[in-house]
Image 1 (cartoon, one colour):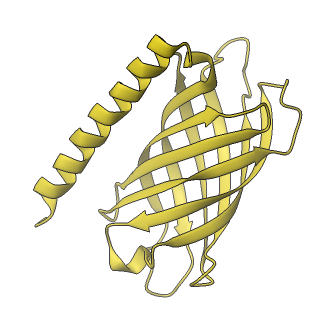
Image 2 (image 1 turned 90 degrees about the horizontal axis):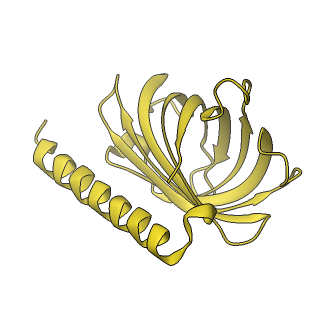
Length: 168
C-alpha cells in the first residue's frame, strides 16, 4: 500500500477533471454528445504472470464526434488484486447508431496500469458490445463486453460488466 496516497491523489484529481469536463459540456451545450458511466466489471487478463480473474470498479466516459465516431476513456480499480488501470482512445460504432439499446464498436485504446504484471503500457485494438436489456424499466442500466489485444505484447484481455449511465 505504499502507493495509496499517490493513487488517492490521482483519483481525486481525475474526479475533479471529470467534473470540470461535465460542467464545460453543459455550459457549451455538449451534454448531448457526452456520456458518463459507473459500473462493475469482471475482467480476465492473458499471461502467466497476470493476476487471475478480478472484479473492478469502473468509471467510463465517451464523447461523440459524429454519429459513428467517439472518443472513449475509462479508469478501473481492481477490487481483488489492487491496481489502477486506465484507457483512452477512439471507437467506431459498427451497428445502427439510431438504436440506443444495442451497439457494437471497433476501436483502439492506449492501456496503462499501476502494476507491472498488467503492463507494458500499449495500444490495443478492441471490440465492444453494449446492450440495454430493460430499456423501458431501467433505461440507465447497460450490460457490456469488451475484448482487446496488445499490439506490442501480444497479450489479450476481456471484461464483462454492468454500467449505470448518468444523465448530465
